Length: 463
Image 1 (cartoon, helix red, strand yellow):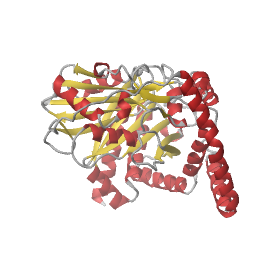
Image 2 (cartoon, rainbow, N blue to C red; image 1 turned 90 degrees about the vertical axis):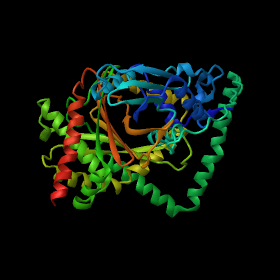
Image 3 (cartoon, rainbow, N blue to C red; image 1 turned 90 degrees about the horizontal axis):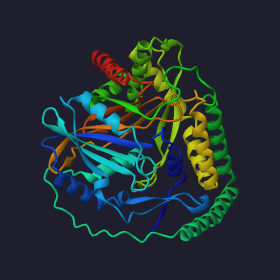
Image 4 (tube, one colour; image 1 turned 135 degrees about the horizontal axis):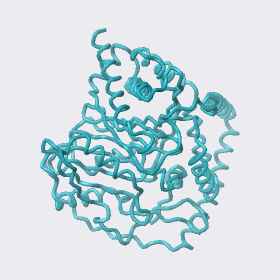
């Protein structure tokens, strides 16, 4: 059995080139003692019975006739994916961040299923960590947190082992894959025909949708123009840096109640404060800068699917505002504008059009853009800020409670810094990814986000 990638999944695969690493990841910290080799293998094998994709690898279609497919890996070997690592003394946050950066600086082996995991020993205070790395072509952020829930348990008591009788399906021939791709392409014709006929039968709906898409395109004219260059955007190398921060969801809710806005508004305001601090420490004037962030937005219609179902909007972070409350007000105004701009609907429609494009042309175009942006830096979008909701209850690995859950988001295409946010069990966890050579101060950004959040909380509590 084969499972064909969506166009968006394939784009994440094609964008990878040895410098732009397109994997997402997480660093989960648990109470001790750490799992031993037998326990960690049992935990992962149990999870594999519920996550078939983790035993599948990528197969390309001959002559680029179709998008790549997922097929069972007949040579699947757990030892290629699950490892143990000892953290450098003293086993604190700094050493864990350095390890995370090092593990994220290399790409996954496409000859095998596109994931790896490390059980990390040696954390201070009798803790241990599980670092999980998976290619973005397999999952988006929401699906990724769902996979972690599949791996872990909601109960403190270890679950009984599940019988694993998995056998790989026979791998299809190249001819079979090519014929299947041609069949899928032919199958698009009646689907497009039905859509067109549906629009002609409902001209009012067609006009409304066309008007909304036009409004979305008009709203995006700002993102199509270049912003003033800063040290935040530019070429990157293959190595990464990573830093973390955290906050209480109860504190964020207090800010919401007293100062207004949504949880996401509060987060973006804190992130804007972090970037303001970062530019200031670099000797750049944040009052003269313009900082746009891509904010991924879920377009998920199938809660059970593991592929990417996401679009995005581009928001301006108000780094010119010195006061945290003014930053929050500016974020609220910007997000309200974007909600009425129909840019999300435009993104969904464009994703649908990409599905109709010839796969070979899309692959060539993606790789050409990636090569171009290795030297000709874009200044349209400076960073990425992605917020993924996680479970608001404790998770356990063989009876050990997960206490922290930090995310990792990739950087690419002239973006040197990105921020991922993940909520878990009453807390928010921030993961800051940076380019090794041009963003050595990721800890300044992480500390600035924490300071920006604390400033908002202080203002809210005194209101």
